Amino acid sequence: MIWALAIIAGLVGLIFLVAIVGFLLPKGHVATSRLQLKQPPEAVWKLISNPDALTSWRKDLKKVERLNDTVLTTWRETGSLGVMTLEVVESILNRRIATRIADTNLPFGGTWTWILDAREGGCTVSITESGEVYNPFFRFMSRFVLGHHGAMRAILRDLAAHFGESSTPT
Image (cartoon, rainbow, N blue to C red; front, top):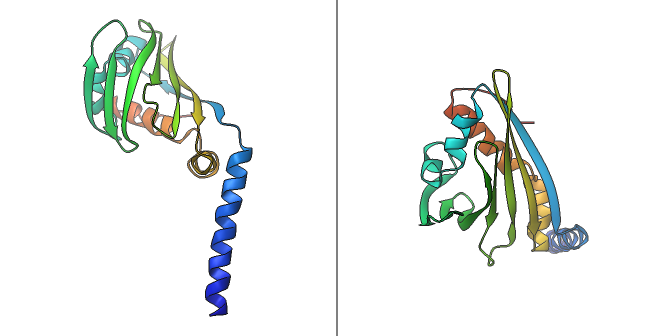
């Protein structure tokens, strides 16, 4: 009986500690991951800027539904993080595209800015996440368990694999 109480007290203490640390962490963060590819920026641009092409190379996506096709495209993704709506907030052909999470009911939000830098023999692809995690428990998990770079690195690995390359994101 005393062991059961000790285990319960330990779990409650751990949850309390996670919550306290989560409250102390800043809501906002900025993280960047990069990848060298042997592809020209134009080839990479075709994949990252077209919502209809996303499911052809991103392993985390099950479905993409285009919501509008104006100058700044909006779409809904269904994937490993659930369902979220994204919109393009900036686009410079073959160079830079920034997307923003348009949903306001998620425990996180922010932007991803993709930058394609041409270099001899290919390009460097960078993703910068300017994110916010609103829930203290998710903030703790994002910082210490999942890492701010986890999703970006997975998507960059998927991009490299689509081109038959095995580049490792940094």
